[in-house]
Length: 93
Image (cartoon, rainbow, N blue to C red; front, side):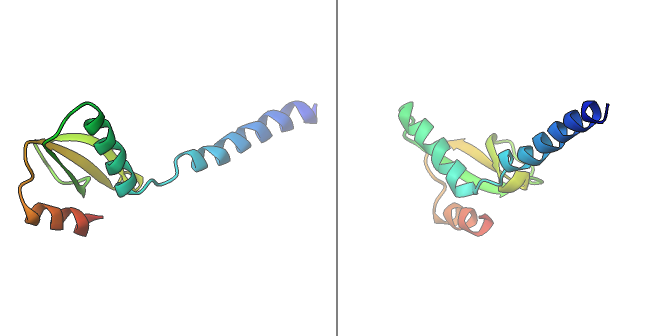
């Protein structure tokens, strides 16, 4: 009888512990590079990806989240808005 209770609860415990490993925090730069590779692969040549806080309201398209859900990556079609945006990206990461 003890085995009927012990084994399922042990299995549930192991699954929950391993799930935290699956949800490991991925760096913003890694996800941004993957998104950029997909866009480049589709022939998109003029775009800007920015990392912003998850609380930042934006009309831009959100293409990913990173840093354990604390930040999001936005996509803007067209040429980069300049060095100021690049600085903002780096300071957010």
